[in-house]
Amino acid sequence: MSDAFWADARSRMLLDPTVANLNTGSFGPWPRPVFERVTELRRRLAEEPMDFLLRQLPRLLWEARERLAAFLGGDPKRLVFTTNVTAAVNIVASSLRLASPGEILLTDHEYGAMHWCWERAAQRQGLAVRTFPLPVLAEDPAEIVAAFRDALSERTRLAFFSHVLSPTGLLLPVKEMCQEARRRGVLTMIDGAHAPAMVSVRLDELPCDFYGGNCHKWMLAPTGAGFLYLARGSEDRLQPLQVSWGWHHDHGRLDERDEFGSTPRLRFLEFEGTRDCCPWLTVPAAIDFQQELGWDRIDARNRALARLVRDRLAFLPAATPENPKLGGYMTAFRLPENADAGKLRRGLWDQHRIEAPIIERPDGLLVRASTHFYNTEEEINRLAAALSKLLD
Image 1 (cartoon, rainbow, N blue to C red):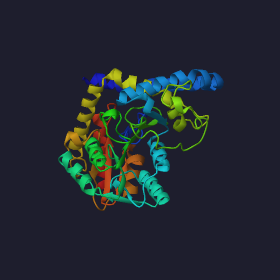
Image 2: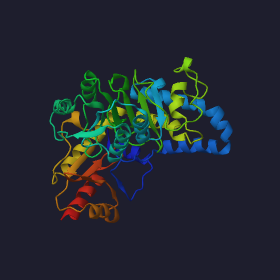
Image 3: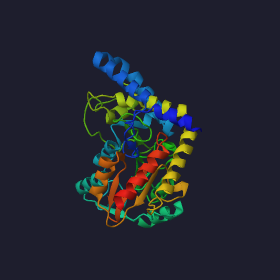
Image 4: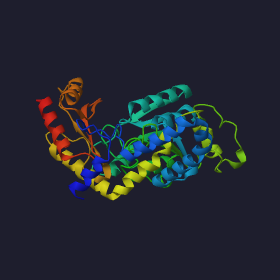
């Protein structure tokens, strides 16, 4: 597409013009139509809460559930809305009962807060948490599947891994990994924080037991929109984090749409009392916005930007494989051993107004660039120049 097309698309985003925002991998900025929609919904909620929550919300909630489920290739009757992927993982980790003694298996690149989540679950149930090293610069997905297969043991009760790794943007072959786990009777939960709208997610084709995700990153939905997906056979394993009006429900119609915009099974896990559901209800607007631009066009644009990042930051060793089967729109680079994380963070922001995370890993520091369609060549050049100066 022409530069004019993408310039117009960028103009439809709420962006601080002084900032080079290369961090959609943490939080996506909002398109103007998404901001306007969530603001409209909150105005309705503010004006007449009873009418909104009791009469308008059920229809809007079911519509949002159907739209998100269709986008993700799943069944709306298996999709629980959550605040974010952290809430989704906590529902599973806090209520799932696993046979002890045994272990919970994680890759060595999982998000720190989620590692802690499984640590607590293991402590409560007399289990161990074990990590296995990923071949992070693998040239073929089969190398990752083999490493996972070798890491599974008779003690493994559950395996937890990301669809897209937060530190490096490595795309894991999650379908094949889940198949390996299922052959051994091991439960699986996928952390899909970065996957929706970056890679194709077809939930009903994934042989996992649970899948959690965020809508506030690459989907560009409002903060507060996440989900938990329940695979067939895993529906009755969980308990809600908070007990509210969904606790007592009609077990004879568990998966029938109810008068609340849910089903009894979903409401059991989803309803936490009075809350602002407007981020969930705005998910259709976020889907519509990028759908109008064209998903294939966005993918081509984002991959071209990622290649440009590799070119401009070629003075640093890449920490993300080049194979398109193993990566998406996030590209990480290794920083020199003598680099100071705090100094780099302060320098990128205070001196250059650049949003790009410096990630501290056991094997050294990384800098990660997340490029979405609204980013520009000038912003990537700006990052390259800033890093060259700060590392000099």
